[in-house]
Length: 168
Image (tube, rainbow, N blue to C red; front, side, top):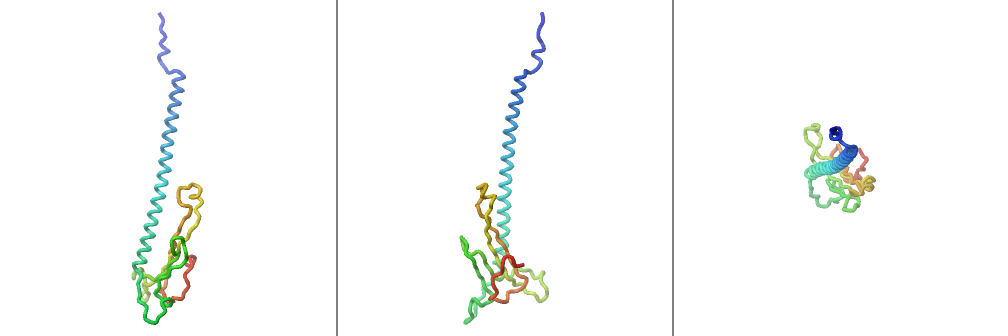
């Protein structure tokens, strides 16, 4: 009697195609998980970068404000003519968009013998449309930038106009 031993030795074509199809489905699912993980990682990295930048900017503003000095204006002196003046200008949605004041936050080690530690400091807030955010709808449609300007000389003239954001 003859037995057919070759039939039990391998897989049928249907079984091979089914295994290939299942492997393909599993690979696509795994690729979807990895791509979503990568997208979430990039969003989290961007949020951390924004938070770190904002914290550094707030530390710099706090340092400048800590060195600012309140000076009592002498009697009979126009307060707007005094060189030690804290000014805010510009109208934004939440208030002023520019501030200007004097501060003493420069270390003495970086100065010459007769130099002053007092400097003028100005901050400018600019707003611009963020086209990428508008397209994705994920973040706000505006991007705000805080610019810091600092003079290399002590304050001397209170009538000096507000510095331009482009001024070196």
